[in-house]
Length: 250
Image (cartoon, rainbow, N blue to C red; front, side, top):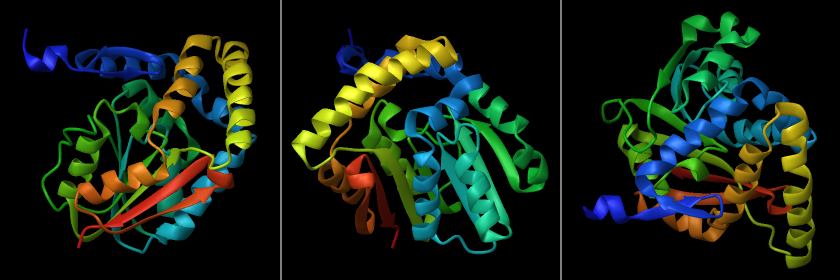
C-alpha cells in the first residue's frame, strides 16, 4: 500500500482516507444542491448575505478584472463581483456539477452570461495556466478541500503578480461561552433544518462538523502566508462566526 493510500483526513468528525474525501464532499453537495441557497438563508438568518457584501467591500472590484471563484457553487460571489466591477469576467469553478447547474438557472446568470464561465474542477489542481487571474475568491468552500494548503498554493500560482486572494469561511469565536452557545445552536438546530427543508440531515451534520474541524483565524492566516501571500490579514465577521482572510501576490 502506498503512502498516499494510508494518509487520512477529516470528513466532519470522521477520519477517512484522503482519497475518499472529495467523493464524499461531492455526495454532500449533490444531495443539497437544489436547496443550497434556501438553506444558507435559513441557517444564517440571511446574515451570509451581509458577510458576502462585506467581502466585496474589502475586495473593491475594479472594472475589467478577471475573477476565479473556487467552490463557487451557485454563483453568489461571482454575481456580486460582476455587479460591483461594472464590467469584467468571472469563472465559477466547483467540484460538484449539480451546484453549477443550479447556478446557471439563476436570473443573474442569464443577465451576465457573456461575463461568466462555469467549470467543473478541483481546487487542488486548477485547470488554468500560471498568472491568469486578478482575483481569487473561495467562500465557505476551503474547509471542504482535502488539503487546504494545496488549494492556497494553487491560488497563488494562478493569480497574476499584484493579484488578490480572499477567503470567506466559518471560523471560531474568541469567547468560550459564546462558542459554547453557538455550538449548541449548530449541532442541535441546523441538522434538523436540513432534514425539514432539504430532506437531508446527514449532509448538514457534516457541514456543522466541518466548521469545528477548520483551523482558527491565526492558524489559517499562517497557511495563507505559507502559500506565499504578502500583506496577509483577516477580519472577523459577527464576532468570529465567520472570518475574511486576504492576501496579495506581490
